[in-house]
Length: 87
Image (cartoon, rainbow, N blue to C red):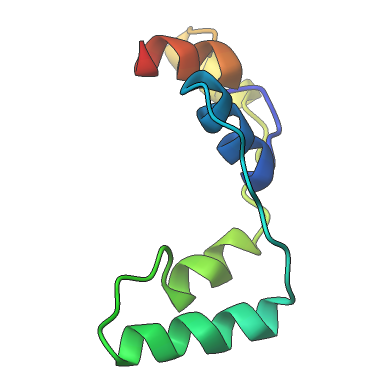
């Protein structure tokens, strides 16, 4: 959709929709890679893989103008889409 949303904001909105509060803990990416890498090697249930962490660091934003022109649709905003999806 047209909204630019951070991963933290996505998690906040999902928690909010479920009537919960997000308890986020921030720490350096290098530490997260180490911790989750060890968890993966030990076959522990980690919330994200090292590969997913790497992808979260990439810029995933693009111009949606060509999509609008090609398909003739107007994408809905993230919060509205989330609300409809989780309803």
